[in-house]
Image (cartoon, rainbow, N blue to C red; front, top):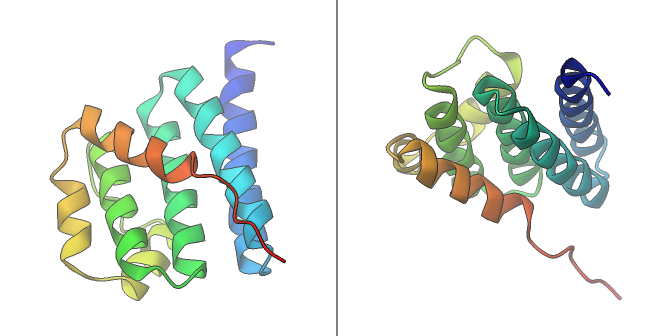
Length: 129
């Protein structure tokens, strides 16, 4: 696989996570966000990693976890090195989850932000009846 293929695969998985979350398939969305994040890390391209982080934030927002979503969004901005409020996905989560949690995530160093995103996407899948 060409190195550029990993970028594309990560972006496709992140987009699939957004679509799954939007349609209410939250377990699938979490799996896709975790896959996107792992692939993105392999690229070492921080804007791609940030896109995967935004997908994780979108999933948290869909689960009704506004503070979690805001903090993950802030961590994604820290990884990217800048805010990206022009992105429709970022704007939608940010508008739904404005809180001090965004500032907490944004204040993280890149290494701390990567660890925060890793923790979010590597949680065990929920177990149901």
